[in-house]
Amino acid sequence: MGVAAAVRASPAVRVLLVSTYELGHQPLLLAGPAGFLRAGGHHVRTCDLSVEELDDAVLDWAQVVAVAVPMHTATRLARGVVERARRRRGDAVRIVLYGLYAPHGQSSMPPGCVDAAIGGEFEAELASFVAGAPSVRPVVLDRLSFVAPDRRGLPPLSRYARLLWRGEERLAGYVETTRGCVHRCRHCPVPVVYDGRIRVMPRALIVADAVRQWEMGARHLTLGDPDFLNAVPHALAVARDLHAALPDLTFDITTKIEHIVRHRQVFAELAGLGCIFVVSAVESTDATVLRILDKGHTHADTLTALGVLRAQGLELRPSLLPFTPWSGLGSYLELLDFVAACDLTESVDPVQLSIRLLLPAGSLLLDHPEMLPHLTATSDASGYGWRHPDVAVDRLAAAVADTVATAADGGEPPRVTHRRIRGMAAAAAGEAGIDWHAAPLPSAPRGSAGWERPRLSEPWFCCAEPTGAQLGAARR
Image 1 (tube, one colour):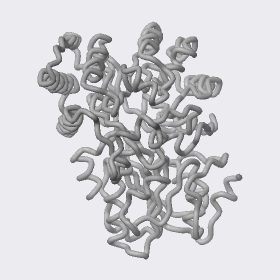
Image 2 (tube, rainbow, N blue to C red):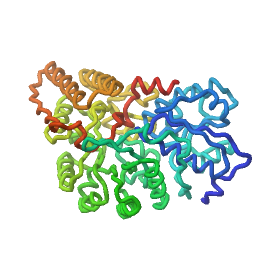
Image 3 (cartoon, rainbow, N blue to C red):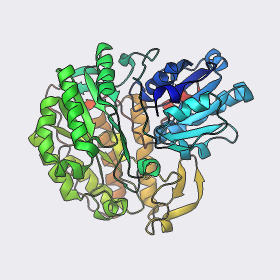
Image 4 (tube, rainbow, N blue to C red):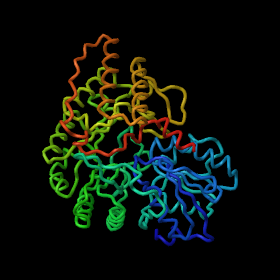
């Protein structure tokens, strides 16, 4: 579908694009549709509630309010936005959700607050909604012709997450080179929408957007694909193009453990092109959990991947899923030992030790025979409920989540929070009669600011419940 056909509309419409949370990045889900809609002649304003307040005058200006919901945290925060917009404007405004969580997130919104929801390749369908289409498709997998993201009017990069490395801070930008994923991990929201498909973004647009962010001050770039190595030739071509255009740029990628092992030969080149760390969904050390989630890797593979990356001077930053119906207290202790023994404390944000399995509408786990015994009869804005067979594990999960949220809101150093979590786990082990001899945390490098391993300053995660501070900001 051509851009002109996708975005043409008459007359022009006043559109307010709202982001509630995008992992501490300047929101691509504001810049992308802003470029698309402005190319069609619409008047667009943006508001990122993670760093801005939404003024009533802006709500009153809008004819359409479009709220980005790319992840769980953002969807939970979006509820307050749509309630406020509907309460203030009534039927004088049309409200739409867009992004990965939109098709199933609409059901978690207050009745009557949302007029439409669009997931997948949403841009052209969003333009149709803005132009007054009476209905839109909830999931779109069309191959679109894109325009460049338009970052005009967005808050400066200085208000977002920074790269912390070797005692320095660098402004960080964000792009995506593909959407969707060829894998169907059962706990992941991506296959619910894309069902094993990917859509490749044009390299020229990726590089142009990266150069624009460099001009805005970015010296590091997150390549935020669900899996950067889903299309290895495209991935390497993008990395080469970025390095040719911006030789001093560093970047990070996300990819599966199995891809690190299978494509180990690419990491020497990626490191030479500026890659400094790799995010990967390790999830668990427990073989049962990895099997049920259909992760495609074992714990031994994780250790291999860690070695592959460190051999090239790259750091592994694991994302984790410690609390599932099949993860007992012993599994949690093993996970903590893995983090300590492999010297990953600086590379695991404390929030990763608090993540509890989410079951949104459409989850591939809902009809899994090993999930069914644990489901509760109710669902809420977070999705379907479940209980752990050991009530002590649910208590620990809740306590860790509260501790991590309070620490993140208060700016507590991650290493301090790690020690708190390990103390809570030791207490739970003692109550259960488990003799746990925890591996000690390695000491921070002498004289360092605690940033020797590269990481971004954003302490939160897409699958976590919002903190009190995040909820308060979204309601303003």
